[in-house]
Each structure stands twice: as structure tokens, then as C-alpha cells.
Length: 283
Image (cartoon, rainbow, N blue to C red; front, side, top):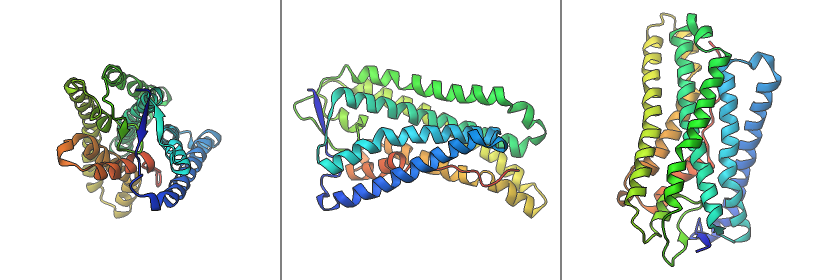
């Protein structure tokens, strides 16, 4: 088999143009917003702080993240050609896996930054200096690159049956596995294990950070001080909730209990609509 056919939103032909315009608008806004944040981070000396350094990394990641999926979706909606080569599928999946895993770690690092800012402000400059920020960001990106290699190696070894139609709008592991006549138990177990560990560990770390943050905020005697402290992490909370919620439901809920259309809907949230994390203010 040399090509796959991504069925995408083919069951909604009357909405193809509308979806194309909607996704194009989302793509342009996402790219413009993220590029603007990166440019401001680099150009404005006042933004050379750990919080904005990690935000710049997240913006770079989301620029790549969105560009991995949306251009091919837009092309298929415009031309009607939904075919994609096997090598193109594997490349797309690997890039998507790298960036998703990296976002897990970056969001966890950003929660740690907020924890230090609110719970340990006197030692913040020491515990979150430029060198440590760079190391944390580098570890996040490196972990993302390495985390997807095992799955890619296993996926290249499976054989597919005559059907080459993937009921999704991008190359995803779960719909693709259904096309294989090979024994995919090891692959499915590996995907489930890596998804669980790779998402739950950073999530639990983030959750623990926010438990400490909320505990500290509740002990602030001034209402103004509490509101100011909460405002520094409110947008990050929304980002974490959206990103983790849709990914955990999309990948960790057994396929037997989830419809294909529901899986597509959740996939739109974390691939077409990447969460935006913008700090409201600084403490």
C-alpha cells in the first residue's frame, strides 16, 4: 500500500467550503498571534523573563503544531483530494506526536514557574534563572522528540489490509490500527502506556503545583493581592484544562466506548484549535 485516503469531513459535503473558510481563519489568527508573541519576546527587553521565555517556546510549538495538521486539511477541503502517502502519514504522525508530547512538558514547566512566582517569590530569581529556563525548555523539546520514536518504529512494522481509508482528517494512530491485519496488541499497549505516562505524569505535576498555588492564594489576606496572584495563572489553567481534557478523552478512553464522530470533535480541539496561554499580568 502506497497511499491512504483520509475521509476527513467527507460525510458533510455541503459544509466543505464553510469548514475551509473557518479553518483558514483559525490558521491565520493562530499563526499571526503566535508569531507576534515570539517577535515581541525577542524584541522587547522588558519581556526577557522566564514566564515570557516559556510562553515564547509555547508559541513556537503551537505554530509548528498547527502547521502539521491544518495545511493538509485545507488542501483536501479545497481540492477534494484526500490521499496522502504512507511516508507522509508517518512524518505527520511523528511531528504531531513530538509536538504534543513537548506541550505536555512545557505546560508542566510553566506551572512550576507560576508555583515559584506565587509560593516562593524570594527565591524565584535563584531557582528560575536564565540557565535553568534554557535547560527546562531543552529537556521538554528533547523529551518530545524521543517519546514518539518507539511508536513510529512499531507502526512501520505493521501490515495493512486492502482498505486504505482512514476515517479521520489527519493521520492518527487509532483509526489507522483498525486497517491492519497484523497483531497490533503490542502497538496499542505501547501507545496507551506512553500516552498515559507522558500525559498523566506532567498533568499530576501541574495539578500538584496548582494545589500549592491555590493554597497560597487563599492565605493572602488582601483581596487585591489574591486577585492579582490568581490572574497570573488563570489563562494557563484554561490552557491546561482544554489541552489535557481533550487529549485524555481522545486517547485514553477505550475506542469501544467512543464514536468516530466524537473522536473527531475532540481532535479538532487539540489540533485545529490549539490552546492559547497568555499571561494576564505579573506579580
